Amino acid sequence: WRDFVVTEQREASERAADLEFERALGLAHDGKASVDEAEGTHMTFEQFARALVGRSNMAASAAKLSARHDEHHPLAHYWISSSHNSYLTGHQLTSESLADMYSRLLIQGCRCLEIDIWDASSFWDASCCEREPVVTHGFTPVTRE
Image: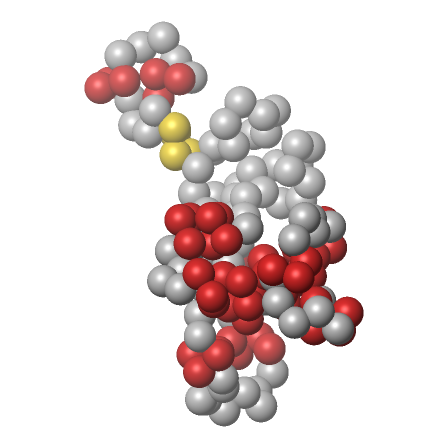
């Protein structure tokens, strides 16, 4: 554990690595004072998972995670409305694809549209330079406009 934390996690202090190991094993609750007293102890999966999500292994500091903005608005105010398979009228594999779906989604408030653009040569034997790019759902059996 210490080698992993010092080498891979780049923890500057071996003692800090030992403290995190103790936290992960829950040694403080077992009455053992240090890692040295627990020589030969291995981590269980639960202890390893606890170490991975522990305070010292967070991607951002606690100060960065604290709320600094008004968060009393509806959840929809904090998300960008987006769309997947924007051109489809229904089920991904069995519905029609319509160019009109893009305008419908924008009118409904969507602000991020997915557009699958393929090289025309993927669909025709003709030179790709003679054809416009194709907007379609790949090679699944949907209609093309």
